[in-house]
Image 1: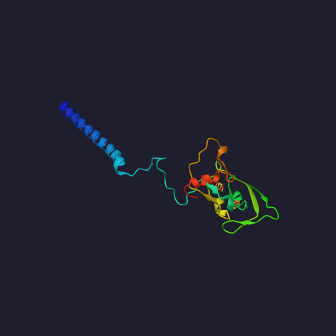
Image 2: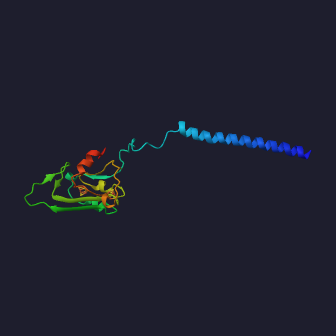
Image 3: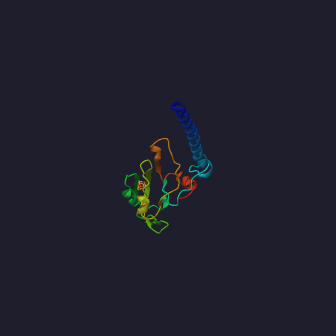
Length: 169
Ligand code: SF4
Ligand code: SF4
């Protein structure tokens, strides 16, 4: 009698285990299928597809040096001291040009370099710029092989070409 009861219980356990195995397999497969067909993908096929950045995204900085008055406010505001500016006085009789927002350019900008390897993209430098010539671009593809190459000289001749390439300044 006890042997028969024991056998019945083993058969029950067998089918119970079989049922659990099948149902949990289907549960797992359902989660997989849901992600394949029903859930919108969160990744993109970069670089063929590029993400559209938010309007105010802060990527590589750009200085439109023609409108820079060498006031150094950006360098003073920078929390990591990664903006290097030098300038010199214009000769007495030099023509005083104006920026696009009407500010007099009384100094000649001789260096404007940002060490992008140090920059934390806080945006403080752009906030204080009185001529709004320093802005964050939407360019996030500027990896380099060396740390030194992350220093960008905004008076270099290739800066205009870079500006023309980027989507938004
Ligand atoms: S974004 Fe911030 S860290 Fe980068 S250069 Fe401007 S002030 Fe400095
Ligand atoms: S704050 Fe603007 S105008 Fe002044 S030095 Fe910096 S980039 Fe030039």
